[in-house]
Length: 261
Image (spheres, one colour):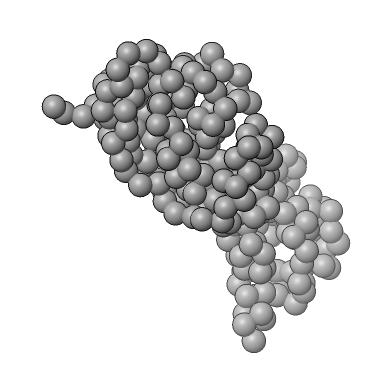
């Protein structure tokens, strides 16, 4: 009964979106007289590469569908990311684990730039460095000087001597970041970015295999760390915090706040 109800919900959802579109929205010529509100079923069927009868049955809740066909229907109906995910859920499909992450909210970048004295990074789910502020580049090696495919905080902490000089006690931070990463990786087991990082960590530091094989998980805990700006001089105390941002972006902001004396 539940499956039948979901089929009907999916059919009604697709029909409502079909009725919102005009031929011009999908590159079709408009005709003077149209009895049907929005697109016709045969037009959606043609755009999706399915038969008119099958698409009609889909809207009527009479057939199941494959994910590939539903993706094609979603494209034909110009569904945005939220509507596409909802259609997949109604059809019983989980969101794609390896689908590209949504672009990060530009307000997050503005927030980083508003902290002139607090080095900060915007990190993706696999701890890739997405953005940074001037204060960060003044203390750490500037990410702009690092090839884009190497801009990963965990990889840099475990494999780059310059980063280790800035953060002499880097190991506990790296271990906690890896636990944070594992938490996200377990939730998205098929995600390509997360799988790729696991392989790169093992290649970069095979001597730390015990770390990479560890199944310990947990969110990154705030702490006080010693930072040597530029990798020189006596380390100064900074508070280090990882701020989690809302889904679906699943990004995080790592911020270092100079400790008050």
